Length: 317
Ligand code: KG4
Ligand code: ZN
Image 1: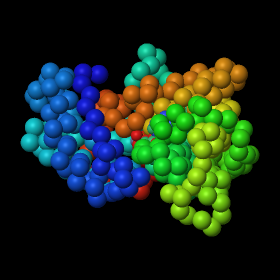
Image 2: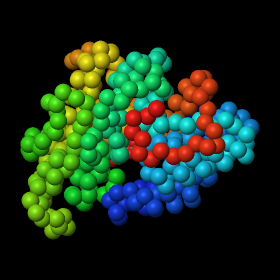
Image 3: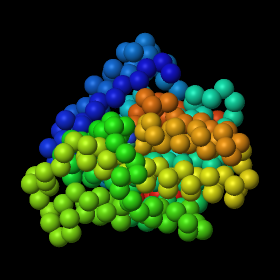
Image 4: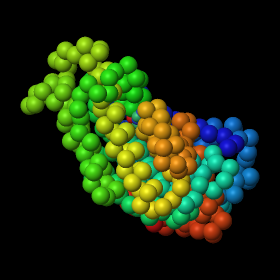
């Protein structure tokens, strides 16, 4: 890695306790060129040193994807560089290969981010078979909503996790939806509702009126986190066993979660499989994971200037 720049928008979305798509795309417009400049300056390279330009065109919020795609196409045309299209979720998993000295393939890949919770059987960086994913909310979205209910700020993952470390994970018996189902799907909406009932009770919505002491809040966080971690770890193990692979790779923002990391490490030791979790700084969105573009470069898979965004594409190519 020669340079890495991230323009965080967290402050802009904080008072809405979630990402507002229009605000996100405007902020992308304002920040994209300074961010590219800053990465090039850190890397101490000039445009003529660049081999190709990679851009994530799927999946994600349409406006934000468009800003990135237009910037990448424009630079590719102006600097006369080949363009490479990458899938954001595949790139999250590639963060694991990026930090490994040996090939991590074949492996099971688990992506846990703000918008997705997906399992893949990966035979190479670019050959991923989608096994299943969330049928409603993503794990990260559940963390963010629990944080919003407890008025812990945005993004919620780190705040919930910090409070969870002081709580009792057995205080509330929250549901582990679909944990015993013989498939690779997830569901987190019931868990969100269960947390809501634990905080305000059925029917009520006013979280500002909630009078919950710090110990109870920590217990809610710990019990919620334990429920998410149990389901993620159990489905990942199921996939490792089913596909007879000896390696599990985990990426995406929620993979920064300490309890999830600890539980995956225990499972890997117990079940005797190899585990690579993206390092915390490469879990949340960054462009380093876009190094997956090298794999496409070596295969000669380039995009044309006709490339379009595919906001809803989950399964990849
Ligand atoms: O991968 P990411 O940066 O963006 C997407 O592609 O969605 O993931 C962001 C998500 C947010 O929902 C955030 O709350 C969650 O990752 N997150 C965490 C932690 N750090 C970030 N969730 C749980 N524990 C964390 N430590
Ligand atoms: Zn992401």
